[in-house]
Amino acid sequence: MRLSITAALAASAAFAPAIAAAQTEIQFWHAFTGRLGELVAAQVEDFNASQEDYQVAATHKGNYSETLNAGIAAFRAGEQPHILMVFEVGTATMMGAAGAIKPVGEVMEAADVEFDPDAYIGAVKGYYTTPEGEMLSLPFNSSTPVLWVNRDLFAEAGLDPDMDLSTWSQVGEALDALKEAGVACPMTTAWQSWIHLENFSAYHDVPFASQENGFAGTDTELMLNGEAQVAHIERMGQWAEDGKFVYAGRRNEGGANFRSGECALFTESSAGYAGIEAEAQFDFDVRPLPYDDAVTDEPVNTIIGGASLWVMEGHEPEDYQGVAEFLAYLSSTPVQAQWHQDTGYLPITAAAGDATREAGFYDENPGTDIAVTQMTRVEPTANSKGLRLGSFDQIRTIIDEELEGVWAGDKTAREALDSAKERGDQLLRRFEQASR
Image 1 (cartoon, helix red, strand yellow):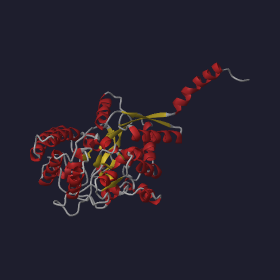
Image 2 (cartoon, helix red, strand yellow):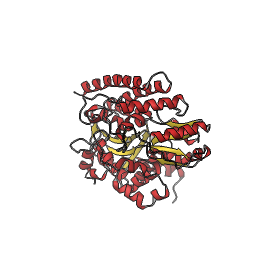
Image 3 (cartoon, rainbow, N blue to C red):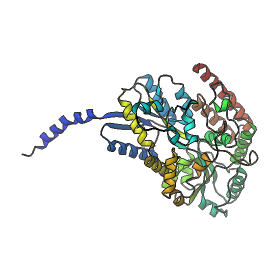
Image 4 (cartoon, rainbow, N blue to C red):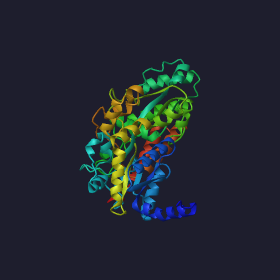
């Protein structure tokens, strides 16, 4: 006999709690919107469909800073997620959060889930690993800065779109010609501190801070006001005054200007690929980040941006089995290779990079391997393995304020960077005291 609709609904309602009880929910807080948010949602949906024991619930909590602050506030309230996405400059903050995190290596070992820290590329792994070799968080979305080129604007300005842009001197020559041709926005940038100070320093093998950029201890001081950094910011300040560099904002506001076809050159994360590929109605390509040939004849490596996934303390022991299995899924070669190809983020494992190459992706999409090459061509030095500084999110805000003074013509590069050092060092001393 057929059940009535009412009876069927009642039966379903009675059965639903049993289904829900059979699944352990894993809370995952992240900072992605737009295309990246869609791709993360697809990963979560795929994992949830692949097994019946766990249900990952992904929640957008704002930008990187807002997501970190939300996680800290939630932990204090005893309402923390299982997994928290934290951008790379929050690493020291998370390391100093005693009792708040479970090292990812420990989580994976306890769950008896296959996990090999050596599978991750060195420049990525080192950022999130203790000197003793313990991986603290899982690298997820790691990127590095590159130079994006609007080939159509170059051609319209009478420039060869394939012209060499390896050095900042060559970029300056291109900007002169673009400005002369009437291009309203010859160059813009995203993430000005990350690209034009943090990565500039690493790329040229000069220190951004003492104590190996914080890796060797918390008694650090900023060294971002060295001669090389001052000269670069002074050059950009002159470009801003001449209308060759157009400042759009502290984060990635300049991305909209480039994707719309307004700007000819754009220094941005390799992960800009997802948005540029989806939106740009012009021919574009990607080049290595330029270097200053007055400082070096051969740059070393740039450093990563993006974020990693931290496992939070305070949940039921059985929950961490699901956390480990989800993190293993995210690290798997097919998932990582697809993520790299879709987004422009680095393949965090060597196997994912090899799979991408073997699939012919780099041949079909020239330039998409530049970020990988730029990060892995040399062994990182003490100055180029990354930054691990306390209160660095706040220090970046100080740097942004000072750079904006240069772009507006209110400060010289020397004045701005000296001030950034003085103000930033005060925060480092407070962090050092709090860490004791």
